[in-house]
Image (cartoon, rainbow, N blue to C red):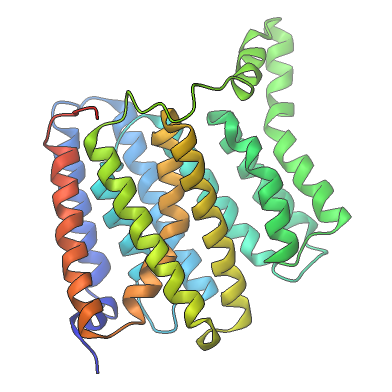
Length: 314
């Protein structure tokens, strides 16, 4: 029996409707910043991330039915967090990771995919230029290549190292010509500089709300998927294993080092959205239908809190 959540998930109007909500949210965020090039550039980067989420869902058949639920969930959670516009570095980090995952998933069970692995980690390297803590995620990506994508070999590992290093090699001639390496050394120093763990002084109530809401939906989606994983193909199970691991890792890092909220929360949305979308698309009980409607209401409420309300620290 198809309920409201299933009809919405499979509707061709879902993504256009969510896009309208996103445009309205962006318009509110841009009020007073209409001449800010950075704000408009961040909106363009977010639109590119959303488009690549569509491609990721389509290319990998993340859902068993024709649906735009993955991208719609990504956009709606981003609206709730007020992430459609903002500072450029976190948005570029998110865009780079979406592009990296999109390419990396094409290497599934192909240990000779040196070129695609290189380009995937080239985007990881670009992400590290805007968020140097990305280097802590690279060993996890290698483990996931070995266990989930089954594409890790000495050749693909070497290609990944070269890919990450390439952006820095390209910057090296400019630094040599300038004769000033302080930019590079300052960037590297941030990698080993840690703020006090669990320090939430600068975190607002709205940020706590969107993190708790996203993690709750993510964990529920995770539990549902793995309890019914036999209904999906092996490849899909492995990809969702990738999403589950990265979601939990981003959530853990965010709890420990909340000063990186703007970036880590954006990464969490990338990896949590397929899990949440899978749950709402492939369940059809009366309880999950109520939860779906309630989740939409909560998402709108948190969006209003982050977009219109004052930034009140906890």
